[in-house]
Image 1 (cartoon, rainbow, N blue to C red):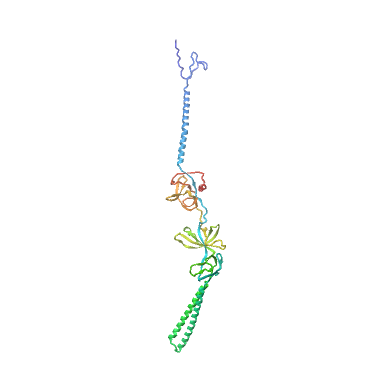
Image 2: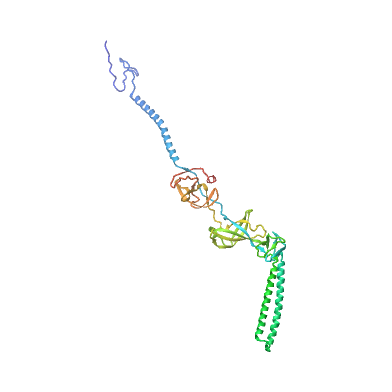
Amino acid sequence: MQTVQFDDPPAGPARAHGPAGAPAPGRPAAPAGPRPVRLGRLGLVVAAFITIGLVAGWLPRWFARRALVQETRALAVPTVAVVSPEPGKADDGVPLPAEVQAYFEAPIYARASGYLKRWLVDIGERVQTNQLLAEIDTPELDQQLAQARAQLDEAQAALDLAKTTSARWTELLKTASVSEQETEEKRADLNLKLAQVEAARANVRRLEELKGFARVTAPFAGTITARLTDIGQLITAGSGKELFRLAQTDPLRVYVQVPQTMSRDITPGQTAQLLLPERPDHPFLAKVTRTAGAMEPTARTLLVELQVDNSRDEILAGSYAQVRFTDTAGAPRLTLPANTLLFRAEGLQVGVVGPDGQVDLRSVKVGRDFGKTVEIVAGVGPADRVIVNPSDSLMSGTTVRVTGGVKPKAVAEK
């Protein structure tokens, strides 16, 4: 059997020896093999799919890691709420405790001993100057006055006799009927009797004046604020027991202790407001009349006296009141919530957030404490951002993130 061997077709495009698509005559058709170009394209497609799969599996992990890093960095930066200092209420003067007193007030004592015969006025009644308040029955004083007058008459009679005797002895001396020594004795006796008369007359005047004190009268016009005696009561002069208490209540004196920080602003003539607890909505106009001129060494306060009109009897003497010096009121100061303060060894501090997000601890000086808010005298400005509820570990230079959407007023009220 004879084997027929066919030569491989030459490389390159096959040449057609017959009609198009027909094998060459006398040779069978060879099977079609894979072409190199298609294999290369298939490899590229497979490589692309593998690359896409790798990228699709790695890319989400990369994004997740990146988000985790960013979140970790964000959580590492503290988040704080801030508030800006706001002007406080207008300072219309600090109310200071004061004491209202009568313009004149005096206890009425008895200068004559005896028994109270009658009293003519009672508490709350108005009296005028020299008006009769009470009468005292003075039997012992009456007897002393009668005795003094009798002694005066006796001294006067002795004086008259001494005058006559001295005149006669002076005439007898001219005729040498008596000696000069006896004449001088009579003249000296006359002077002695004259002195006794004057002493007796002075004693009578003293007792008459004491008898006048049996009528107790008002030393000035005012109101009887106390009656401490009654009819038939024993009255002893000089015992220290007062019968009445009299007060002049129009105008009234007001005394107030002013702190040293305000003492330089108080001058006589300036006005102030007098506030009573029972009438807080009705201030009374008061005027500074004088000051003590020196600080009280214990309390470091200045005693100031004011005068207030009380013609309508709206204010009771002895009342507790408050005085507000409106002329010394200043511009309103800044206030901050009380929960912004840090109590450190260096004193009171607050944390201020700068434009770069870094914290600056500032020492502040506070004024009045209003409870939820405090008055800031120095240390911060109205444009500063102050941290609310700062942590105890907060230090200067710490980077923080300010939370958004926080209203200062809402934070202050929290």
